[in-house]
Each structure stands twice: as structure tokens, then as C-alpha cells.
Amino acid sequence: MQNKLLVELAITALRKEGFEPFWHRQIPANDGGLSVGQVIGAGILLSQAVLPDVTSEIV
Image 1 (tube, one colour):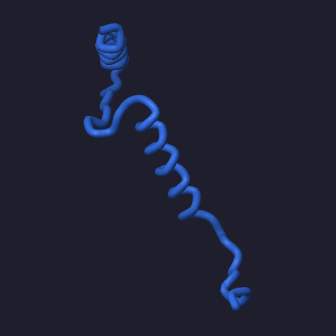
Image 2 (cartoon, helix red, strand yellow):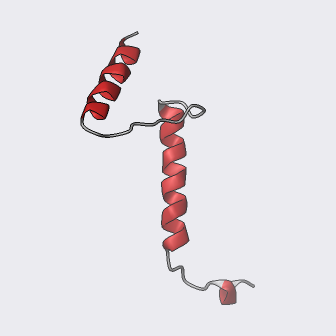
């Protein structure tokens, strides 16, 4: 019940300041959601990384 109240208050405050809040409906808000965010962040970093060519080292 407390989380519902906090979410409703946050939405009201954000909208009052001109923001349009949104949230995911299928990913949990706790540790599961945090893990998904970490995977997405790592994927973005890896897609932008310049990785060394190690194919010549494969025997």
C-alpha cells in the first residue's frame, strides 16, 4: 500500500512539473528490474567498445 501511495504522489508531482512519467509493466520494480537494467547497460557499453582482435591467438 505504501508503494502505491508513493507512486501516485510521484506521478502527480512529475506531471505538475511538465513531465510525462512512464514505467514498464512486465519487468519487476525490484531486483529483477535492476538486473534487466544492468544487462541493457552492459549491452550498450559492449556495443560501443573497441575490442582487441584476438582471433589470431586462437589455436
